[in-house]
Structure formats: structure tokens, C-alpha cells
Image (cartoon, rainbow, N blue to C red):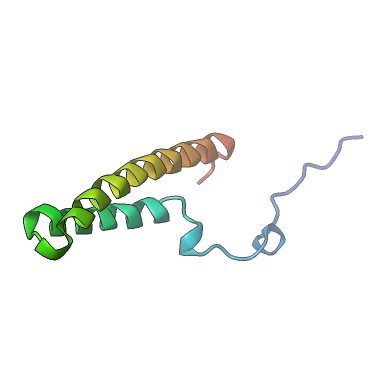
Length: 86
């Protein structure tokens, strides 16, 4: 006797509905925006009162943006390999 194939769980069975904060690209986008902000205040229109803060902050947030962007891309690729349906 053949076993019935398991059906894909419905949205109710998967848990609560997803929010924009669940997207793996949310944090990298926010970090890239902060990087642009620090860069603007550091070199384009320098704020003399906070120049060192903006220049150091630019490189710190740039490193974080690169790291979390790489991790988000890896996560999306792993999700695509695990579930090829859109």
C-alpha cells in the first residue's frame, strides 16, 4: 500500500505571517544606508564637530555592511537550494 505524500503545510501551520524584518536583506540595507550617511558627513559635506566620529564610523559600518550582505546572500542561496519553488 502506497504511503500518502505529505502536503506542504499551510500558512497557518508554518507560524505567524512574515514581516519585512524577517527578510535577510533588511539589516544589510540599513547598514548600507548608515554607511552612506557616515560617508556623506565625513567627506562630501564634512561636519567639523564630528569629523573623526564620522570617518571611523564609516569604516566600522562599512565592514559590518559587507559582512551582513555576504551572510544574507549565503542565506538566500541556501534557501533557494533547499526549496527550488518560488
